Amino acid sequence: MTLSQAIPALPVRDASAAVEFYRDRLGFEVLHHDGGFAVLSRDDALLHLWEAGDESWSKRDSIERPVRSGAESFIAGTASCRIRVEGVDELYDELRPSDVFHPVSKDGVEDTDFGSREFATLDLDGNLVTFFEWVAR
Image (cartoon, rainbow, N blue to C red; front, side, top):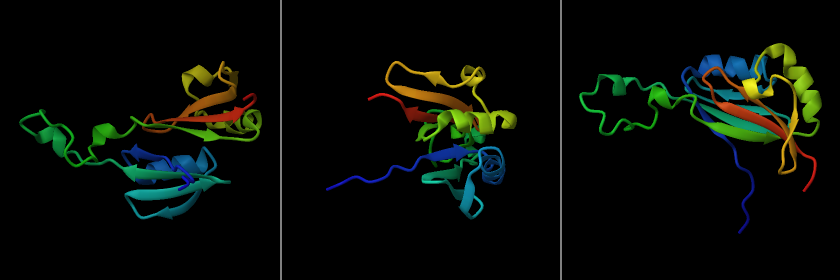
């Protein structure tokens, strides 16, 4: 048995707005978008977006079980993923005009103590997307 590829699936409030953001500001290509679900790619990286638009939780009498459908709107923006990059500094420079950086990455790409060079971005909902490159193993 062999595991192959993991594809992050990020919850978003408005899939159409999120697709525009990932396409126009992060440079992803839209491979599929059917309203509440989208498949995006950039080079070999794949990303799924799914709409967490269920507002019924806000009208419930009890919050004992706040998650019932799994698509409650408050889930949007609670995810993160890491995307491996070759040329992380170049990508940072490319994305600089898009104003997408997490506050911790406003000053540039950083080296970590575990052997990567990386920067973090935030999408419209607050999902954290970190782009990294291995520099030492």
